Length: 345
Image 1 (cartoon, rainbow, N blue to C red):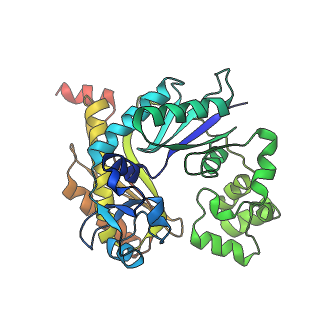
Image 2 (image 1 turned 90 degrees about the vertical axis):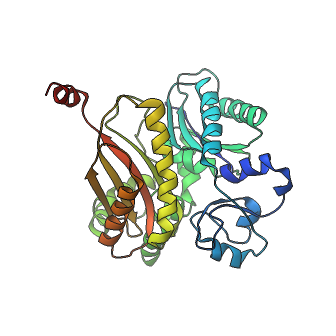
Image 3 (image 1 turned 45 degrees about the vertical axis):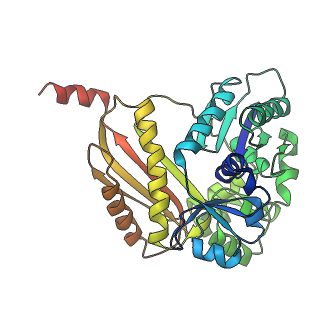
């Protein structure tokens, strides 16, 4: 039986800013563009009490919370802190799958210590060495671990053992499951389905008839079934950064600064880990609120923000101005063999 941790930093960007400037503590803080046309990348818990959240335009956030303090984004600092935290993970396991700067899956199945004990120690070391707090979920698979990490936030953890999965999920709102946004939640509500327990009442054939292949996935999600392994670093065909927004992003203008922020993370990853790889193409991926998706790609040997903006606009246009729930940006590499052949000519 596997033991998977999902470690999620608490309001990561905002927490770093509060650590750097203690005068911000106890006040509503948003990290993002200073102009009213800017977008929040995160909001601390004090700001969330007013309804502020990531991907929200600054002007809307200020309407909800006029006293909100807007702090400019400092991605270099956040990436540096993320590297420190990842180094702590590496003391316990090599089986690490980063999801973003502030969260990761860890497979600790090979350790003799209990998952709960390991999670407590990791969180303690993060607090001691960075002054930041993290929450953790412990479970037999990635799906349940990620849900569990949100259970005792902030600065807490929750474990779901194999024989507890059914009970843990039974009354869980379906909106907590991966991939179920407001529109899918509304469609399920029309069927009288609000919890995972109610979703289990629909058999696989009925779900497939109504929702296609996504219905088959729903059948497994409602039962906490997830066979995905923690995917560690290896020879890669691409490098990318994906962000699933807690609230759908409504406009192309709001997507642009978010994309450029993710692109900086991709750029640093390329410099640190893949400087010897030749880039084949640049890629932008969007998943819309109705779960349809599109990918815009262009052959180009280097990262050019202007090209990414053109690809983003192209992908956005295909969606017919539909709200976006996921944004991905990255590059595809040439095969090493292909590069060698090209070098011969």
